[in-house]
Amino acid sequence: MAPTATYPEGSQAPKVKSVHTPPPPKVHSFDASTASCDQIVQALSLCGGCIVRGMVPTEKLEQIERDTRPYIQADKPWTLDDFFPPETRRVTGLFEKSRAFIESIPANKLYQDVCHAMLTDVLQGYCGQKLENFVSRPQLNTNVIFSIGPGAKAQELHRDDSMHHNRTPEITPDEYKIGRDTGLGCFVAGKKTTRANGATRFIPGSHLWSHLTPPNEDLACYAELEPGDAFWMLSSAYHGGSANTTTNEERLVYACFMTKGYLRQEENQYLTTPLDVMRTYPLEVMKMAGYQASLPYLGWVNLEDPIHVLVDESVTGKLALQ
Image: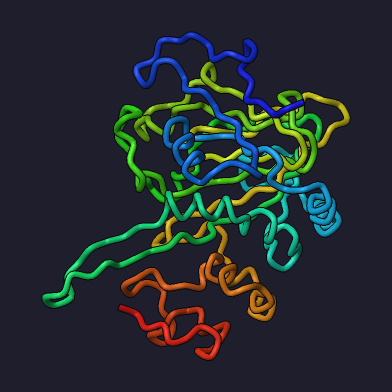
């Protein structure tokens, strides 16, 4: 059965009157082996989310679960507030815990291509009389695994860009421009994900709303996935984990977010991952994790690009800040 985004009344979007966008836009599905970066960028721009089928192969899913199941079992219920139901278990710090996770999900080429297309920021500015292009490339915001057990209540619908204080005015679909969003998330199903066991619910088109517009549950659809399928979503879109109403099913989700290079990371990779572990990854993955300067001057160490904390110039070449 192919994954779909299902609405409460069936497969069609409900006919509702809204001051935002009439009616909710279609949630597109793509095959990871054939989809292009441009197709996905267009779908995200119009809807705020899409499904990417077959993103992670079965053998990689199995390896990720072998790597991380002991950490899932060892996690304790969240006690800071009621944002995570007590039936939810989480795993973070995944550079050290599962190389298969890093290679298959945040470092996935198609995902990274789309992140670069939507989150790279270029600023023109003068240095003396010379006009420069200052490039800030995306960085990892967070890696996390969610195991949601039977009986878990639904999360409140929320926007993940609130952490970056992203203030957005209401716009029409034609007015959407790359740069409005601060992040792009990816939720991969480790097991079959259904509405009954807590599939992510999401409001298509809510990335076009004002940040002060409250969510409307009647507009939500459910990202139902087969193992290895992914739901990709802009950080400005309203979403939340749903209630697990089953008696014996675990909803297992492998998630990551990328964000703009000049923003603070949600998960502090510099303190989470030992340097000796980070050095075992390819250069581009280290940069993705945040070991790269956001030009012209942001994030330096000893007035040099932070990648030199991990590797020397014989590997990277001289990387001068502008």
